[in-house]
Image 1 (tube, rainbow, N blue to C red):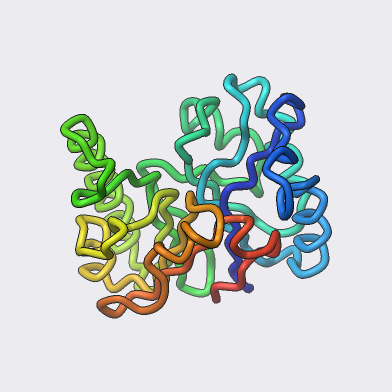
Image 2 (cartoon, rainbow, N blue to C red):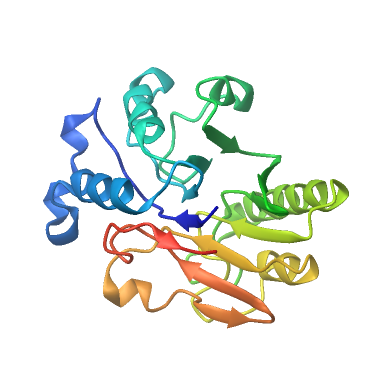
Length: 231
């Protein structure tokens, strides 16, 4: 079993007015590029992690076509909520859709070979120029959700962990955050995330080994619409 990740699919099969083509370049019919690459390299027993911004839909019913498209791709999939996933509903309702598509929220996913995937959406971190008093409450809640996910995996005997966030794990100065502290505390091997777009922005994201944890940016344009091999 190999593990891949690709964030920010921004699918819109039920919302054609949300097509990403307006952003040009890598985003022109981006779903076709992802499909070609995904179907070429991912095997049925592999795992693909999708760190948020899955669908532009506003309602659950409108996201079903996008989730079905993911289901039709090879491999098992683990999805985490992004800031644009406003269609995201109860976790039990989501996880009843397909046996090969697992939605991660206040839980963890055991993946075989001793691996577990743990994570949460994340949020803007303290020290970021956009961080406000309003963000503090959400940030602290996401820290609690991440630790709950990590603790559940450890209590179930998993020692090899891949962490997943939608947002970057630090501010743009790469200062320690509650997220990075937890990933180091629980000896997480790799952390995948998305949210950042464009070369001038992506270069600001934390990448590489930091306090023993390998951080990998997997937003679709950054990985050129090719699922990134993690393990």
